[in-house]
Image (cartoon, rainbow, N blue to C red; front, side):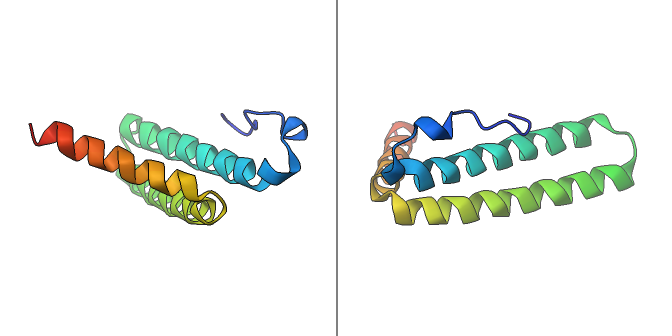
Length: 94
């Protein structure tokens, strides 16, 4: 993603704008986590690796903040997350 919103928010209906903003925030944080963890894997400098992994951890917290808000605005999202977790448990218990 790297600082570009993946959808045209001007085309989103007013009643969905907040949900889409939160989803874009989650995408941005996930992108940042991936970037920082990849860079941490590449560096040979332990100080840099430590800081990159710490920042990646903070981005995961930000993802949780956005997701918590999204679940308030989109209850169906919560139901689908639960359904997905149940499917994983079913598959892994076979």
